Image (cartoon, rainbow, N blue to C red; front, side, top):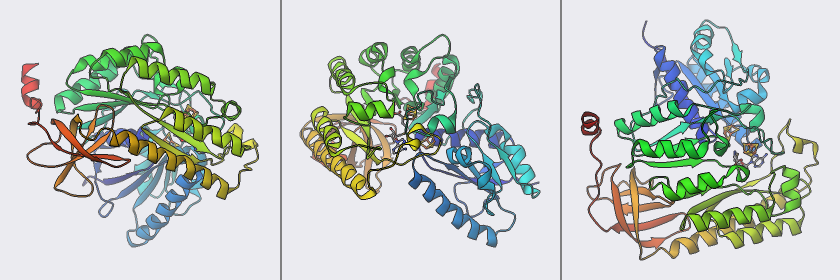
Length: 449
Ligand code: SAH
Ligand code: SF4
Ligand code: F3S
């Protein structure tokens, strides 16, 4: 029998990207082949996101296209994975096009369920687990510069607006040893940067080690490898973690720390467990301990009952704290969450205006911060061709700023000093200031080890 070909399409956060690699690992182990395009696939999987309504609308659109595709390719199996599978469950199976619905903790069942679906039997597996962490699965990754590793799953925070605790279940962490082993393998394969992932990654605890210990252990694996993490909840941003980032040279000084709102009343309604002042002091502490730290945030506009005055507090906080970047969202009510019970009373248009105002302000600030770097030299890790031109390459600074430069002979994985000549709110543009620093090739490293 020839190997069945599986195409996986991924939506949502980095955790979903990492999960798709885990799914790839599980299927590959069982003789399936992962294909990069849907055209010749026997199985189409969409790994979905449920965080906001528009994420789900987009996926229904995709399923519509898959449905057309299936008419011309009878026998193709279509599976919905991820957070939307977990949230909507068996109702998704009512869609003609869908053969499989598999939640984030049930990916080990996929080979068997796909087998049965090929025989015409629809299947569903959506149990959440208290222990599943896929620590023993080798994710299927293409060789590259940056890798993402899930180190914990789930979330116990239950912020009142958020569906994640319902789609991903309770928090659980992999052992430090299994993470270190994976990072060691990635280093040998030539990866130059790892990002440790979790929805609430700094509450990582494997029974013996906390997140600061994990970060230090990962940093020690290969000092020439950069280490990042995302996402952190302000409440779990410990002094020990800040110290670790300040003192270990290859832990990148870049922190994503979602604040959500600048109003204490709204933060309390969101059940975020901190006040604006607590957050402000945390930012001061981070900036004092880690000079030049890149700081980014998330903001929700139009949470139930948010007044204009409270919106202004968010705007003022953004102006005061001068983040390097911010992801901004209109509040979207999610079933099962506590906020679902509150009237969604900020009109859509008003939410749009508020989110626009925050976004515009952040753009101005990002541009000012980037423009101040013109004339300086930045050390970047080269990632590959820029999206806009194949003559340009892109890389990132340790503080997580994207830098684009005209390519000469640089290779992905090189470190390069670049003189910054121009800036936009999202990107720095520069020219090479010195010869690239090339890592020892993986094979050399391996034989030296
Ligand atoms: N675990 C992360 C957040 C993951 S979701 C953390 O706590 O930092 C990413 C972002 O989506 C959140 O920070 C929040 O700003 C936004 N978000 C989550 N639920 C939302 C909702 N119901 N409506 C609008 N934005 C939402
Ligand atoms: Fe959602 Fe809050 Fe958990 Fe983040 S910390 S995933 S916002 S419940
Ligand atoms: Fe979306 Fe699930 Fe991630 S809801 S943001 S894919 S954890």
